[in-house]
Image (cartoon, rainbow, N blue to C red):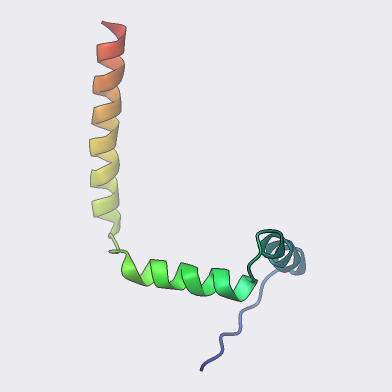
Amino acid sequence: MGQLNIRIDDELKEAFIRKAKENNTSATELLIEYMKQYLASPQKNESQRIEELERRLVRVEQTLGELAA
């Protein structure tokens, strides 16, 4: 099994570990789960993200227009 070393602010590290314990898990388990989710999700490039945001904005504007009518 491999190891990953990262540098983070001490306060961030301690807060993360503390919150993980409060939720009956560990920082390691949370980070591994995040990595698995990240790898499983399709990655979108910037133009795809912009297109998605534009589509969502159009839907919001349509809904607001319907509510105002």
